[in-house]
Image 1 (spheres, protein in one colour):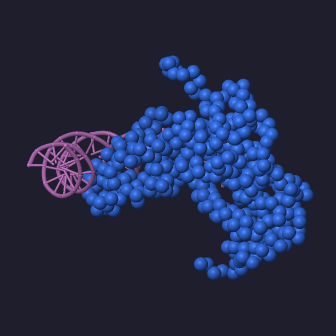
Image 2 (cartoon, rainbow over the protein chains, first blue to last red; image 1 turned 90 degrees about the horizontal axis):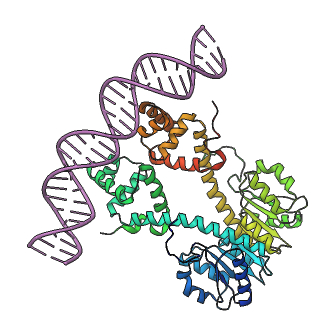
Image 3 (cartoon, rainbow over the protein chains, first blue to last red; image 1 turned 180 degrees about the horizontal axis):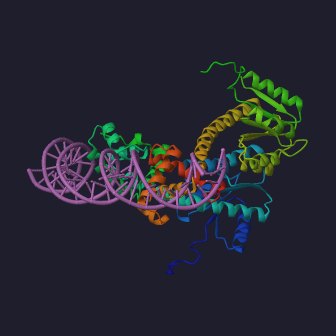
Amino acid sequence: MTSSRTPIERDTPPICIIDDDEELCLSLLNLFRSVGLKANYWTSTQAFLKADASCDPKCLILDVRLPDSSGLDFQDELERMGRDIPIIFITGHGDIPMTVRAMKAGAVEFLTKPVREEDLLSAVRAALARSKATEHEAERFASVRSHYASLTSREREVLKYVAAGMMNKQIASRLGLSEITVKVHRRNMMTKMKASSLADLVRMADSVLAAPDNGPSSGVES
Amino acid sequence: MTSSRTPIERDTPPICIIDDDEELCLSLLNLFRSVGLKANYWTSTQAFLKADASCDPKCLILDVRLPDSSGLDFQDELERMGRDIPIIFITGHGDIPMTVRAMKAGAVEFLTKPVREEDLLSAVRAALARSKATEHEAERFASVRSHYASLTSREREVLKYVAAGMMNKQIASRLGLSEITVKVHRRNMMTKMKASSLADLVRMADSVLAAPDNGPSSGVES
DNA sequence: TTGAAGAACATACGTTGGTATAGGCGGATG
DNA sequence: CATCCGCCTATACCAACGTATGTTCTTCAA
C-alpha cells in the first residue's frame, strides 16, 4: 500500500538454509527462486547466528549433521534463546529417535535425502504459514507485555484482582485500602494497559499473567 | 473419599495396548503390573473399539502394523471420532515418514522394537500426564458448552456483544432493542451461564465462541 | 383452552463504576 | 532544598449496571 522507495523484494519471507553441502544449498536456492521465494544459506550454525538478527528468518531448513554442532542441538539452542523459528530438517542419515526428538521439539517437517521438491515446498509453505500466525500472536503479546511493564506494583495488584472478577469494594478490603484508592489505581491501570473495556482487559491479563517467566511474584520490591 | 463398594483398583488409569503380537502384549502387561499400572490389551483395532467406551483409555500403546488397519490410520480415525487419547507407537519396521506422520498427528512417542522398558515407562508417564491435563480442560469446556446450549438465541447475541466489551446501551441500539430489554437478557444469560463475574463470563465466551464446530450460527432453533 | 416460555418494554430504586477536583505523605532526583 | 512521582484519601456527581415489579404479545404444547 505505502509505495515508498523500499528495496524490491521486501515482503518475500526469508528462508534460511544451513547445510554444509554447498552444492545442495545452491540447488535449493534455485528451487526457491523458481517459485518466487527468497532464500539465503550458510554452511554452519555459527555463520548463521552472526547474520541471524539481520536476516529475520521465517523458516529454517536445517541439516541434522553439521560441521560445528548437531542440527537437533541447534534446535534446542534456538529454543533456549527464545527464537521461535519453524524448522524443516533434512538428513541423509536420519533414524527414528532423531525424528521423534525433532518433531517433539516442534519441527515442521523431517525429510530424508534425496528430498523431493514438492515435499520441501509444501513444508516451506506450512512453515511460513506458521511463522505468520506466530508473528501476529507475538506482536500482540509483546505490546501487552510492554504496557504491563509500565504499571506500578499497586496497579498490578489491582489488575490481578479485577481480572479475577472482584469488585472495587472487595479489592479495597483485600489490599487494606479505601474504595476510592482502588478506583484511582484501576483507572490508571486501564489507561496504561490501553484497555478499551473490561473484556479487553481480562484477555490481556490472561495472556500476561499466564506466562510463567514474568509472574506477578517478580514485581515485588520495597 | 466415598468408600462405597466400587471395584478395587478404580483410579489406576487404564493403559490400552493394541498389538497382534500376543506374546509382547503379555510381557507389557507384566511390566505395567510390576510398577502398579493397570493395562489391557487387544490384538486388533476392531476388538479394541468394541470395548472402548467401557475401558476408558487414558493411554494407547499402538503397533504401527496391525492385522486389520494401519496404526497410523487408526490414529486418524480416532481423531475424526473426537477421541483424544494420547498414543504411544511401537513398531518393528518403522521408517522416518511414518514417524513424522505419527508425531505430527500428536503421538506422544514413537518407539522401535525391541522396546527398552525405561523408554516405554517414561512415555507412558508423559501420556498419562497429558491425558490428565486434557481431561480437566475438557470437563470445564463441556460444562460451559452445556450452559451455552441452554441459552436462547437472544441471550447468545447479548453474550456475544457483552464479551466484546460493549455497553448495554450500545448492544440495545445494535439489536434494535431498549436498554432495559438488554439488561433482562443479560441477567438471564449470566444466570444460565453460571458466571460469577464479567471476567468469568469473558473467559467462558472465549472458549465457547472460539470453537468452530459449534459457532453461534448453528444454535438457532426456535 | 389454558398455561408455560420467550420476547419486548416501562418505571423506579439501589449499587457499582467512572470522573473531576483537591489534598497529604514519603522517597527519589535534580 | 525543591520538585516530581507514586501512593493514599476524600467529597461529590454522573453514568452504567442490577434488581424488582408489572404489562403486553406471540408461540407452542399439554
